[in-house]
Image (cartoon, rainbow, N blue to C red):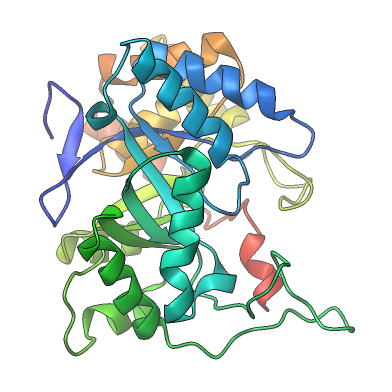
Length: 313
C-alpha cells in the first residue's frame, strides 16, 4: 500500500484508493442529502466514489465532482470514479451504451473503474428488473464471457481505465479467467463484506489471482426494508466490536472498517452525517493488533444484509 496516498495497485497498473465513498441512496433519503454528503466527503479527503447505473444518482455525483474541480479543490485525475453495468445491458451490443449513458449523466469523459454489477443477465428494456405477468424475473440467456469481451472493448476505447466484476462467486470468476482469448482479467470483485460476513475464502482466492476485493455493506447496512431483513442483528451494536472501540478510543464503525483494511480489502463507506463522514478518515490513524483481528475473525456468521441477489432466484 502506498502510505502517502492510501491506495493500492490494481493488476492493470492503475491505482485505487483503499477507502471509497458509496453513493446508494435509500428511498427515504432525498438526493440533495447525498449531494451534500459527497461534497463533505471530498472536503474531508475522500477521492474514491462508487456509483452505478442502478443507483440513478450519477448526474448528481458528477455535478459534485465537476464543481469541486472547478473550485480547484481536486483535479479529475485525483478522483477515482466507479460505475457499473446493469443486467439489462449484458448483451455485448448494449454494454458500451450503458457506460456511455453513465458518462453522459455524470458529464465525465471516462470512468476509472467499470464493473459488471451482477452476474445475472436480464432481458433488455425500460424496466430495471423486468418481470413477466406472474412476477417472475426475466433472465436473458447471455454468456458472461461475451459480456466481458464487450467490457474489454470499453477499456480499449478509453471509456474505462479499469474493468472488474461485482457479486461474482468463484465459479463465475473462473469462467472469465479461463476464457480463451482473455485480454484483460478483472481488476476486482466487489462483494458484501463485513465482520459478520468476512469473505475469507473469496479473499484468499482473489488475492491468489491478483484481484482486489472491494467491500460494500462494510458497516452492516442502512437497514433499507427493500433489501434488508429488519430482524437481522445490528453490526455496530455487537458487544465485542463496541468493547474494542472503547479499547482503541474509536467508534465501532472505525473498528469495523479497520478490520477490513488490515486484511487487504478496499472498503466502501457511506453516511449522510457530516461528523461521521469526516471521522471515517481517522481509520488510518490506528491499527488493530493481530490478536484483535483474530477475535473479529471469530465473529463471522456468514450473514448477508443485502438480499438484492434474491430476486434472481
